[in-house]
Image (cartoon, rainbow, N blue to C red):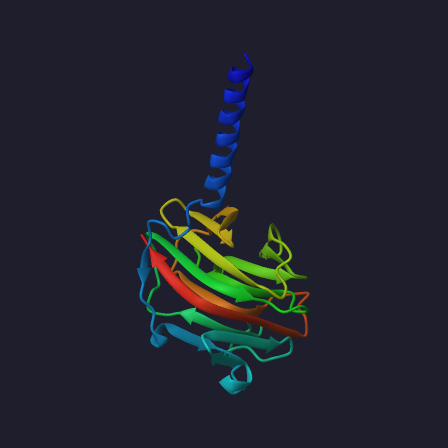
Length: 217
């Protein structure tokens, strides 16, 4: 009987260890996707129309730094939109298929009320997705909580848009955090940087990005 009990204990321990290993070594969000090559021409920069790019953007050692002030002008004189310094992934607009954005982001303490990632285009409205930072936490627009405690550290962002199923899935540091229905068909493309939210934006907003990639199925 003692031997039988020991055998059972060993089996239980082995199963627990295996499950733990599977959790650690789970599937990566990019598994099954094909990387889409990006060149400098695919990074279309938008910034306050009256400011030199160098006063709102810097690209050094593989890191793209975007910043904007709450009272800055929009990206063009006839626009009624909020201030932004963003990069639009140009040349890979989509209206079907399964697409994925990936990048590593850094948001310094104090930046709040700002969109750092979005999918532009929708059946109604301007965007299908906005991921905003409020007081160090990430939210879907100003509503659902996606992730917490993101200030002052690099974190990996993956956004998968399955157009056929009308689903968007958000991963932070490889962990699925949020799933939501999209906003219907449209001319769709990814953006990242800083785009001031309609309300409760800090005076100064900044995000830094590196290793920005695009994938599709």
